[in-house]
Image (cartoon, rainbow over all chains, first blue to last red; front, side, top):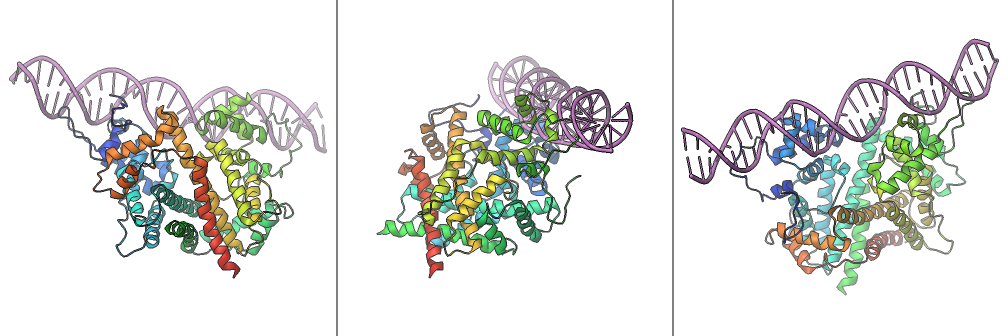
Length: 253
Length: 253
DNA sequence: CTCTTATGCGTAGACCATACGCAGAACTAG
DNA sequence: CTAGTTCTGCGTATGGTCTACGCATAAGAG
């Protein structure tokens, strides 16, 4: 009954199968007191409240009024729980693009949707990703992204690469932004003071002769003014979309 | 003697100061038997050999023939050790761009240099990043990247954003590539069989009516043929550089 | 020689994930 | 109704983690 590889493909962890609704309850035995969904929801609640580091098996079990080891009847390992937490944490995909939107508007909406999720649940960024997406919502997000590029001249592989590019950017940007927020909270500094403090620290460490370009940036003061983070996000996103647009134009010829 | 905030700026952990060569040995007391560098090198050796998960304080101490707690005389916490490991793991920056290279050639070289480092030391991707770079080599990499954009029409903030964009892409791409490698090793599958197996699994899970775009990509077979990962990398990098180029052209007017 | 300081590190505490096994619940076959 | 089967809940225990604390000792200063 362990990880078995049947003809159709490699093994899928039981808890993931149950996320797809592929598992029916066996007829015998006592009625389960918990559900995979209930466990995942409790874990998400803990992460929302106290961060990913607070998510331990015992803490989740306490949240449910169950014993720690009871969870292992439903979930193979903590890693599996984390995978399902990501799926639940992302939530339902943003939906297909409106019919009148071109690919660029569609992908902008798609990117902002992920952006909003990551701003709401920064702990999603701390979950170590262990493989390509196989959970329902994750594949739903991918589906909605692919639909945006459906009519374009890009080949299938190029469409995947483009989405990977965008999602990578969104995650990267969110990581940096939340790091500033978390770092300032940890250091007891107001968020607006974080970048200036960082600039001062770096100024003190570097020798202007060995780091001329960095010194130039520091003295320019761009790090001191805190810009609107949404503008910052838009900037990078537009760069990437410009790059994809250039490719689409070339392919369309 | 705890984290102190003097006039110049916020506190820097002692071990980081010693990485900048800012700490001289106090005249009294027994001669230290270890060095920060020695500890960091040992930790890097462990990570190179057995991955980041194998890096525990006790394992590093064993590597040095010292007791676990001896390390804490040199390093404030494991997080600090990880920060220094990243610095050492990246190694010296690629150097300033050749004088005859334009910005695009320079940044391409810069991106490939990081790409090569991450391919060599995949564990760097698993270190949770906790803040902006303050270690010597990290700032050296930033410096070399900024020099590539020195003559362009971009403002300082835009130069930083552009580098962030590129480094984020490089890390993202390396993460995906190494995940395939690590995942296939963990599942006991040959690396070339990983993506086909993934495609088969997803095909089995999704309903073509609910996931038409995804189904279209799966049946197209792009996931089955394993392309040259270097080509894949070049593709995305060129998209980003195209986007930056579009901006530079607009600014230059 | 004494005082001061820093080092090496043993001990112990507070966590963590999880392997294992047993008591009992709920169903099926007879 | 009974016996057998199967699954759940979960207590116990193992081996791992980081690190706070305190003590003996080494080395230089005066």
